[in-house]
Image (cartoon, rainbow, N blue to C red; front, side, top):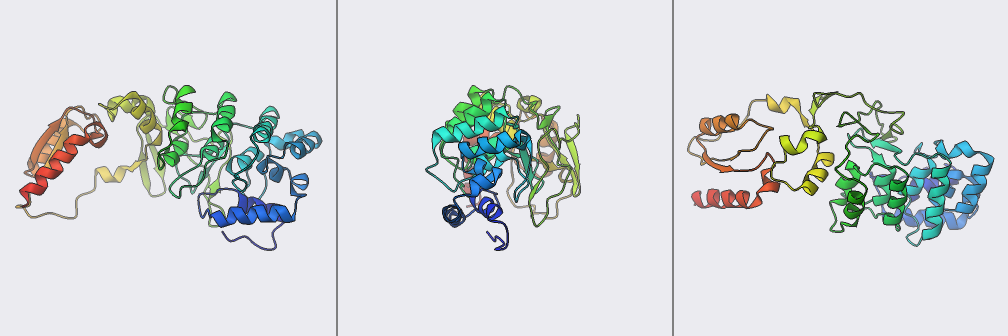
Length: 344
């Protein structure tokens, strides 16, 4: 990460210490720890640093002078103190008791347990809970006290249906977070503060090259509901499935646990994909295979049979919903093997 040398030490520390899901490097976190060692007075000088360091003593002093600071924003990312605490990773040995005490101080002073930001205008916000649970495509570390910290947030009202957290954690084998989120209602309530009518909130701002983060808490940056499940975007219209209808429309044959997760981590498709013509026409002699899902309510079964007949495809039916790979992976395996054998 490039950090301007002329920036205030507090800002430099926060940029290095906190995950940003852009260019997170272990070396940055080590540099943050070194910077803090060189400037041990930073938590006393800056409330956001005190939160990131879980320095409850200094945080309490800051809040005594300005209680409203718990709900304010600042620092290099324009985050709240609770967000900085959730995303800080400079100290793997950070104390559990002071971590929880710091979070309690902020929550009791009015900090929003559902605070978050959109990253590069993705449809799912990176919330406080997302930061605590960590991980992701680059295997960013979760908070050293992730389970206890997350439980504290959930007790304070954090939405367990955190799509970005579920997406990030799917890259690892540890499923401790799922046990916790199911305990607090994952999949049972899809109308959290970042959603309206079951649809992900739409960012009302644009991220920039300087900062990929935009929009603050859902009370300040909430999209309008679209009953149709579509959302206009600069490049076209995105289509979502209302999580309340996800099982019947898309996920027939999946377990309730699979539906609960898939409904909140779903990624959009563009509406243009439904009307675009194919640009490659394979030779007529090329063997073709079509799996028709008999419980598919995303694409009409009659349409699937029609397309298979038009392509002169070999048809295999399966008694599942649209997500055949998840509901009936053995059917996928079988068809691939049969197609490969037919090709010699």
